[in-house]
Image (cartoon, rainbow, N blue to C red; front, side, top):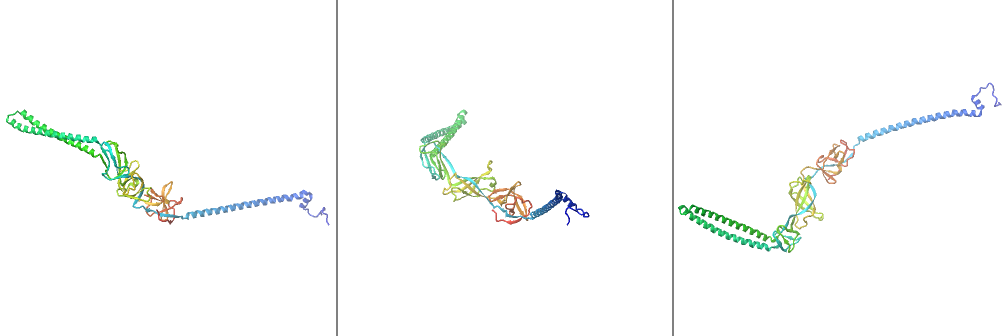
Length: 424
């Protein structure tokens, strides 16, 4: 058995064993330092492998993302959207316009007193229907009767003066005829002949003056008698009394006292102002329908009877009158109403759905599909019907317009058409 503390001479020395036997701390410390260096190297290698692996994975994912973007871009480029379209149709031969209007009487007259006096009797009141020639009121004027009597007396004087003047003329004519022969024979002087001749001329002129006075006095009597006839105030035409301003005993003055307003209501005249863009094509004979909000279950047909030849400068509107038969007096003058006019169209127009209209920085336009490609066409809207609009240019009847076009739809874009039902 060998002692542990004795080493044979021929046995080689073990460096590691001797180191461990020299001191207890030294025997353990040397192997620990070597283990730390080995762990640090192992940790660094692992981190390096992880870094390389992360970079490789990132590069792979980036490559895959690029491939996906390229595929999406290629798919977007090749994608052809499905769009709904509707056909543009031509507007009808007439255009319907609805405008506010006011009814007026076909005839209206303010009746004034034509003679001065007092109202003896009033026979009508507001709302009364009268016929032409019906007595409305009677006026008593005693002074007028006296004026007529005086004028007739003056006429009688003038007639007597005429007779006297005619007699003087006849005497002068006889005297001149007799004396002219005596002057020729030398029995009378030339002076006497001139006196007789000029006296005859003067008497002839006096006769003419007397005749003129008679004619003037007869005309004055006719005037007074006409004023006498105006004491009976009669209706000038069939109608209804809408205003009354006198009563029994009222004093009236010729030419200044307003008595009645009479309106002819069997035919109602409706006045409407038509805008300039609708006035072309409007003329007498155009059909119209008058509607009153308070009478919703009834329409009043009529026709345009007269139009102004010039538009109002301020409003650019055309005054138009429509006569509406009113035999049952259902309509009254002064009513607010609406007039629907059926005006023949003078310029062509197209109707397109309102959903097809696009408004952006380029203005108003529509997307028209031709041969599978989109073409943006600018339009001008003439009228807006809500679900459809009327345009005058930009499209033609039969064109296919895209409904609710996408914001990225551009000129020349390829689309697949899906037809929409009939527009309008």
